[in-house]
Length: 343
Length: 281
Image (cartoon, rainbow over all chains, first blue to last red; front, side, top):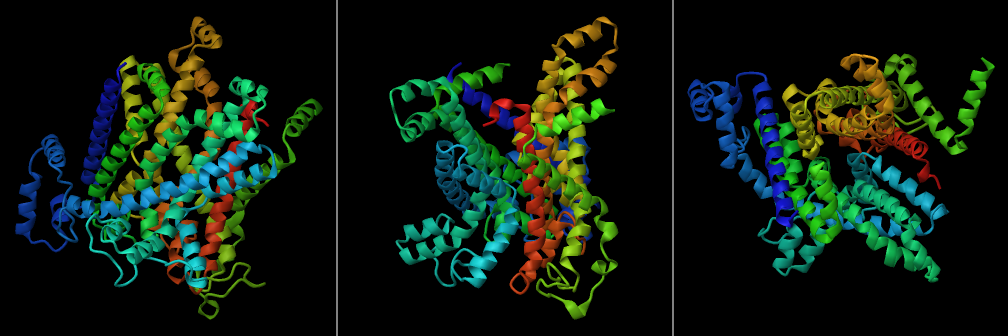
């Protein structure tokens, strides 16, 4: 099984997935109550405008043809037009995507920094108090509504203690010109350090809240894998050699536990694009999730469905990248992927 | 009778004090959800402008909200909505998952292949986002939230169950039943499916925890339950605008969600350990 063929397999699966999602979105559009052309043209549209939209979207044609037209428009990058702003959904989303990616990257780094030390300590001192406490914290972190944690931290750290900013992405008047769309990166590119630290201060709370459920899952799988490796025969010779527990965990158990953890991190990062809806709403941040929640509030159904399609594509691409990264990190995975793929 | 009692006692004795505590908490949570709305005073559905935004006190254990309604009683009354809706979602998508898994196991090879590919597609889509789309199209309400999550939640169940059912099919009692001339439908429904379900029990406990969070999230964005419903996510959403003057109105429903979700997550861990003794320390 060559490496390229595996990647090719993933690509085919990704195309199938996106086709499935597109079909789902098409069905949903058909299920929107009311006359489709009227909805797409906006509530205040004249009969002439409605007729125009009917023609543009081909709504006078039979359904199968409409479906093909719809797929064709998607392939050309047409995700529909927002009824509220009259702008193409894709343009609006592309403008806010970097901000979401910035948040995701910071949150995953923070999550790994929280989860790895905790899991290593817990596995080293298995059954001790540290292990028990960190497990309970992890369970609670995973069982906490992120939007609620965000509101609580905003109130206690932001309003009462005034340590962190509450909402937004930068203080008034402190921002570097937008080049990449990521405030921290833009500030660095402009060489404006105070703007960088300002943007970072606004990023820390949302990134932390985002990182909590992420870290909880990473912690659980890493701890379980570490304990699995520590219980296996692999450790016996090292133990006989007289190595310390610390050394065994760090030098022998950890490298052998990385593959499942990295694979999980990939899946979780993909899922984060969806989780961003809640975080970006609570923190009033620009982003794909914020756009989606906003469109829901404005009852801009076409923008919602376009954004659903967009998030689907983003998630699939992130998953594909993560899959390839996993393959490249661990040659053994290639073998297992092959087996499960062939069945 | 006494033999039955003895077995029961022996079964209970297998669990540690910690595990029994978790069971007791879960049972208590279900009891609250069952009788909550019957106990709650009718005043929680009407406004009392003389007692708005009161901090926790002896009269109002968790304070009052912007309509002067007692938050503690609203939580008790809302327990039924929150927990029942969560259970309904899990039951509905488990049923879809079972149907898909059964069809994939009995059906021809191409049906199996097709259904599993569809499950894979479902698995790689962001559940919350697709559910949000469905709920938006259906119009914002708790029912829409439930339907949306039921339609997006089934692929994992289908995949796990189909694998287990394949394994069960290879066991000798299935072969025995086939030899005895049991019909294919009866074989699946009476023998293979029931003997494959225990793999799902652990998953159900974990699913309750996860679904409760995601359902509250839908309510919070505004496509699930709507205020003034005492559904916990809707309560948080309704109280959000005045967090800075009455933080308890946001804290309390969130804490209720956390208690439930943690209890179900711990239950899932315990069931997992008892299914797989190698995990015991």
